[in-house]
Image (cartoon, rainbow, N blue to C red):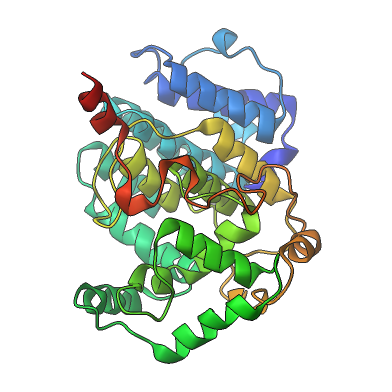
Length: 346
């Protein structure tokens, strides 16, 4: 979404009005707090525009097609619009209809738009499958087929890879501050298991993603995962709208699309997401490109890699050895969802 940083004030106003129209279903629904916070964060970190959101009309702009001419910017706007109905489980369909009208006006026939429309009607399968299929190789470093094999073998602890495990355990001999040593801390704190050991299919499937966590310094709390998704969105050509939508389903509206991760409500932090997108826009290397090899950095100092890649230290959630990569919530498998905590207090 890097082109969104170059918009004129007039274009920024049209983009924000369009997203407000989705949030309010063109005036049928109130302008909710989370939607307002999302547009505020987009203004601050991406559009860098000072706009009074209350003064914006709630209908789609008549000049939408004339103001937004660039096909890439149109796609970015559509993919931002896709997320709006998924921020709240109520009235998803009403908001999704506005997204469909935007796509029709742009004459865009987009898989992500179709999947989001299905999700708004309660059909999440295609969105989940396409998100995994489209991003696993880039984000995790493995194919969908291999991931399924690893997952099935991992269920019966038949996923051991002694050669890989030996290679990873060798990170312990790397100097402090190297990416490899940080990865060992990351897997330990999250109790994920070391890649190559039996039952560690998650670490094998998402090795590249785990390296991304270390390079960015984002923990594995829902806030940290949304920050990683925002970082992906700002990196290169693919804005990973489907991956963000998948996280919104799992961690914002509590739709269980990934059986390995707890489904929670109300975890989306728009400020963290768009700050991460802004941070990624300054990055000089596309870390999700198929030809970028995460193994190329494991024996290098993290600070050196960040300087070379243009990953600013500001924004990192894990800054020192005393801070845990799982965050204050503890290891993912042992976390208690906010809804359960609330029930226990009642």
